[in-house]
Image (cartoon, rainbow, N blue to C red; front, side, top):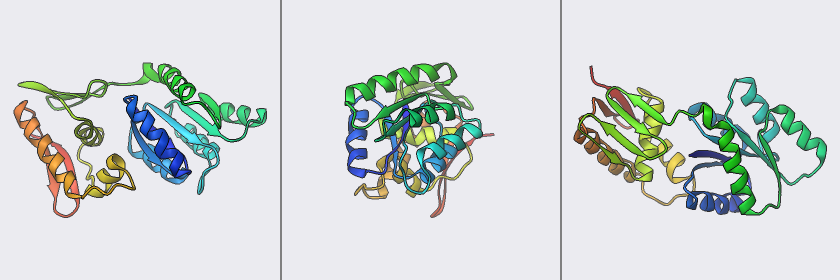
Length: 224
């Protein structure tokens, strides 16, 4: 399951992301509401967690914009405020849940599980392109000649490309979305994982290719 987590307190964000990933969630962390909107526009998430008090665009406004655009992804609001009026406002705007800081991580995890159950009926777990499929629940890549269970970062990279076939994705975007803003990992790791994926696609007889645009990025294309 893939989550977007928008929280401007970076130390808190890193701690929560670490716990979420240990509980087998894939998490994109952002630190302001404007970036949260950009991420939701470009990716598909199973759930969204928004801090209310964020810079650039606050959590209430992000939620209002998402619902006005027809985005039905379950949303949980996090806030230091406990006033009833704020909770009512969030729920009226379309939030699925509301959690007040400070909170216990066990409660957050339980609330996330409940929230994702609400949205599970709308969730398509298998992405398909050409003769190839990617199961987003099991990370399994399947083609006519076999299948592979992809490593987490391989899966995330291919998932991004399969959601947007033909769309150019830069190495910088892969690094930001998968390794995170603060990573010290070298950019060359993107090429390494692209190489792994290309070999696996060939091995399973896939009729899709990962192509590259010089100094620009990578995109997925179906063979004619």
